[in-house]
Image (cartoon, rainbow, N blue to C red; front, side):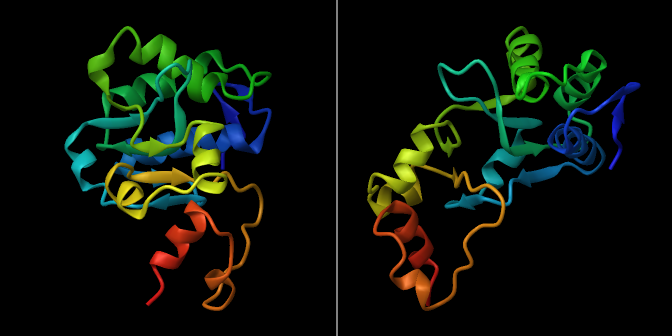
Length: 179
């Protein structure tokens, strides 16, 4: 992984990872998901768009737990170029605020914006998963993805402990994949 962008050193490995995902999508296209995302419906319908992003209403920045792109999407090129003004002192500035406010807002046709069907906004998605109980029909039909917000190593599940783990929406989703 490169540790510099346009001659500036990344302030964190996470910022370097943000740019790496942009580079990979520019070269290959496809679907990027964080390793703590749960997909509840096929994402194929979003592949028809040159670029699909998660940008919840009322939020000044993108969420980048999911990115769906065609190879060489115009938005990705502009986003990558925006790192010429990399600011490593702000956590979500380059990965979320700049692309939302400086690229998409003036050029909304560059992306297909998903505001609600990708449950990535905090703290809303956290509460839906861990404090509320969403009916199975709703999480299977209304939403395409939930970000679990797990940091570090996720809990190791198996066929036994998942049966009794957490009596809420996430537990229901996990148990739904059992035979």
